[in-house]
Image: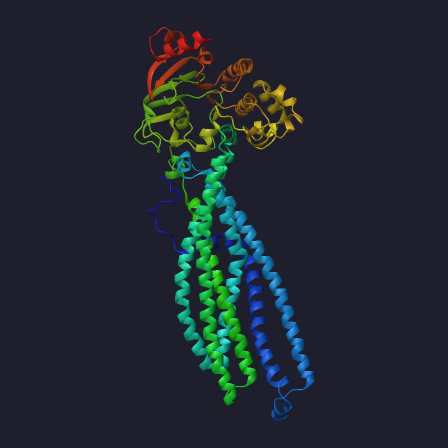
Length: 611
């Protein structure tokens, strides 16, 4: 079974294990990471050198005349100039290294975000329909947008700040120990006490961040679902209802975000108070040491500057820690998608079956044999309801087999399992004598042309929508397929002909026009097996006749399975299979079944008498 997301029994992965997954992406760009780390190190060294320069300025350059006269190490004004020049040089080095670091880490953030989005999207495209029964497409889109944005912030900003302030924190602590061991030891002891509450609240921030992202994803899923059904929403006047539902979802997301920010604010405030409280205590001790003469003013200045760096670094690290915990929550959701494995896989890929068909060997375009052998199947969402019950039939190469029956009889399910969107619980389906699991999925699906009752039009022009069936098709082949599907005349009347953008989901076309584009897409594929699921359902009588003629020409010499409610369109089928409640109840030609007293005869009587 696939490792689909959001299973409550799954143990929450640790933050470090999640961050290691991001490290894999960083490893792709080692040179850029190395430059970033070098610039980071140079900037940290420049920053840590400045307090030493200020110490000499205070002790030797800014000392009182009396003190300077009595001090053997007093320096001239020229030497003071050298120190100031040195300070400016340090500032220049700091500026350049900071700019290089910022550019490199920003580049890494953008690049890794793009890579991660691409990998997640590619993995989602491999999933079977069962995956989307438990995860809405809006949820996936939210993870691809808002979650990856958090990771971009983490890689492009937070990690760099965290490393920089960690270096400054460690370097300043070392210099404080070097400056005055007693005072530094007190600060170190106090800081160790500070770390424990920061870690505790950091884990809480991570959990709240995950909840906040989930609530935000819910709003995206709800908006996507509503916008895709705008005509129904407006036709029923349900705009106020949908607005209210969306407001409730956004309010829940707001509450979750506020709870997260409260914890982050508390974490930051706690870190600043505890760290600077420790620093103030130690500086009070240092000031008394200067008064007593056991510590120079310059050394105290140096110590203060390092203490300020330690305090600022600790506060920033606490802030970064909150960002990391938030990003870890987002990364966890993306890793769930990256790790999700489809339930439908080629047996060749799973076990290396040597008897499986060569995945690079296409099936013959002259037709294909299909056989169902005692196939039973139920959808995962309806485990107690058999959609197919012990179904057995065969379609020989070049035959046209029609499948009819009342709504819910299992007609479309036959095509679903034949395309391996699902696998049956029992029984075997064979294509050209080979069980479907032993066929490479790409080989299987490239051998099948599908025209569904819900014609899908992509946000592209007419030419590219038809060419989607075979990407290497020439323009002339596209025109020929469109002509066969009776689509060429209306396409040429569009503002830009075949280059006309058809709008999202084909909004610029009528239902019949969208269906003919879909039929042309299947025809250009020229597959040995053609599946027609209510292929003419959206056409008017005139268009239906034209397309039916085109389909009959396309079906010649290839195996075709036709699902139809309109029995007039399948009167010439070689064989008609009647399904009822998932079982085959009748099989025969139109003439044979019409003379019986079964389900088909009843359907035929209603339709033909009405016409």
